[in-house]
Length: 89
Image (cartoon, rainbow, N blue to C red; front, side, top):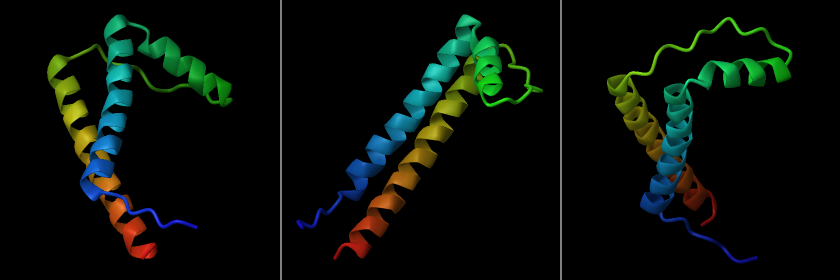
């Protein structure tokens, strides 16, 4: 079997972008006013009552959310690639 080495920066960028994009979709749903209905539906599928209320959209909070999720995703991707490469020497 061929050993695959991951580029830490590239893997980190891909995961960071993916996680931020998923949160961008959520922000768009909140902005369009369908976030609460979506959350109620998803939790209902899991047989859970929703005690959470979606707040009104705020551009500042949305910017912080995207930044934080990108950074956390980037760090997680970097750590994953680093561990992968160490274990597959």
